[in-house]
Image (spheres, rainbow, N blue to C red):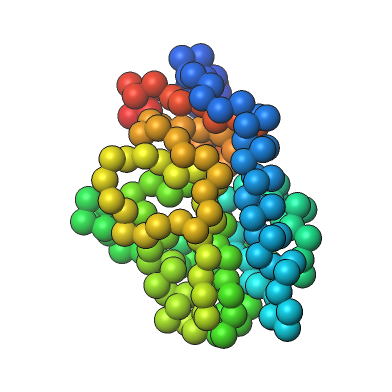
Length: 191
């Protein structure tokens, strides 16, 4: 069984196309860090923000962004999943809620990809209901799906085509989150 999964994972990349290389990915994360640093390094008497990574996809993005931030921050994470009919939005379930108090604070949410946007819209709404003063959505990849999304990110690293993409935290069947660039998997391979 393990050989089957190993071969399947390898086969995914054999027909894939690299759409963004490591240098482009790294530059986009640095640009996002620069934008956040410009905002939070030049404020007086402001409480430092709470940064929330959305697990597990955002782990690579988060790990690359955090060391480039030059302002005091508190870090925590959340884990949410969507169950049910995704065409109708499904039900968002919080597996891990922030341990840190969000009330009255600026919260920066880091996520790997904004696809349909339903889950991230729910996260923002819930954090505001929990009393966050402001929620900043920073997504590494915004997928151009050709329709309006229920939430607009405040910061975007890269806009990607409406294709199935792996790398930099995004996976196919649990594989290839570890790729330093972004690869588009052929449609027939992604189903």
